[in-house]
Length: 80
Image (cartoon, rainbow, N blue to C red):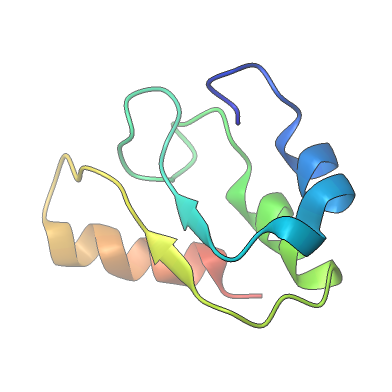
């Protein structure tokens, strides 16, 4: 959604009944979802949780450093 210029949190709030799952990726480049990216994943995850969603969030990104370290950080960022 962000790549297409959409307001990610507004889209989640408006359309969440139709989302079966979520996945992460940094913008730009689909890399780690850390503070170097333009998306605020802690805020996004809070918005998802506020909808009552109880499913999985897939960590779908291309790590630029140690993959397990990147995955651990992503899971921590997405835990609300």
